Length: 153
Image 1: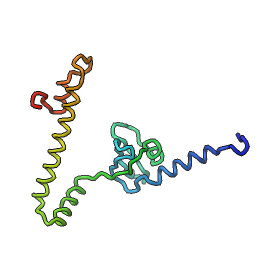
Image 2: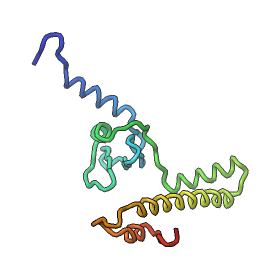
Image 3: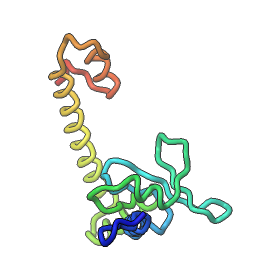
Image 4: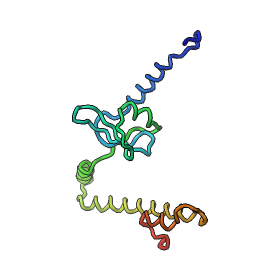
C-alpha cells in the first residue's frame, strides 16, 4: 500500500528495530540482567545447538529476537556470575590487593550484611506506612515473610 513519497516500509522498519535490539544481546551463554534493569534471562545452547532464552517465572523458551525486542530498556546487558566465577573473582581481588582471602570474604560479608539491613529497614518502613485498615495481607504477615520483626525496628 503506497501513499506517494510519504510511504513507509514498516516491515523494513521493524526488521531494523529487531536488528538493532539483537546487536547488543549477549552471545556468550550465561545468566544476564536484562536492559530493563529488573528482569533476568538464562541464555544457553541446547543439545541440538539452538539458543534457548529462559526468563525466570515463565515456562516458555524464547529466541534471541523475542527477548531482545520484548525485554528492552535503558541499561546495558549485565552478565551475572555463577559461584565458580565469584570464587575466581574473590581470589583475583585478594591477590591484586595482597589481602588474605579470609579478610576479603569478611569485608564482602559485612557489605552484604549492611545492604540486607538497609533493605530490611526499607521493607519495614513501607510496611509501617501501609494503612492499618487495608483489606490486604496484614503488615506483620508481610514483614514476617521477609524475616523482619517489626517490634525490633
